[in-house]
Amino acid sequence: MSFAISSVKDRILYRATSLKYYSTGLASIGARKSAGRFNRHGQSAMYLSFEPETALKEYWNGTIRPVVTIPVNFSSERLVDLRGGVSGMDSHWIDWVCAWKDARELFDNGDKTADCSSWKCFDDVIKRNMNGIIYPSQQNSTGTNLVLFPEHAILNTWIYTPVDPGSEIADANPVDLS
Image 1 (cartoon, helix red, strand yellow):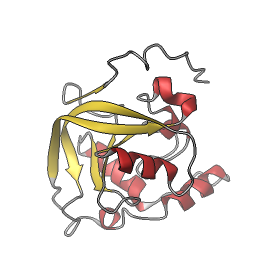
Image 2 (cartoon, one colour):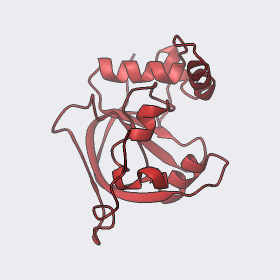
Image 3 (cartoon, helix red, strand yellow):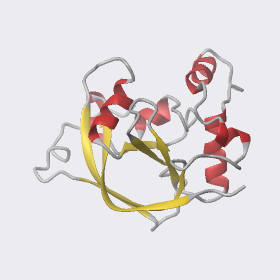
Image 4 (spheres, helix red, strand yellow):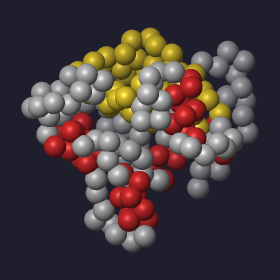
């Protein structure tokens, strides 16, 4: 099996986050508390989009609610790139567009063995020392997303800095992370 490997260099990406976490919007707290497409409960993941409208559509996912969008200057090497397709890859990669929300619900209701194909992609990325995954948006047909696994990413191969010239994020009220 071979991966398409890409890098992103000095590109503005967009992070949509809840008002509750916007001052820590780059800490991936919400993803750690509740599983996402590519991360199980307790696993850190930062979901970003290449376009601001994709970030909003992904965050809303059919339900409009308050949101803060943070532009981020992002660079990373070692990214699995699914934009060109997944032919010739293991079955969990082929089925990455899976019912991960069902697995999350099973886990939330006590089935600690719940699993899905996209979470197995996370395992594969970590095993192969990759930093994250670039993938087509499922909410915006022309959009692209990127998930970074900051706790597992190789040091000095990625960087993200919020674009915050007015220090609005830095000056935000502290958030209770408990």
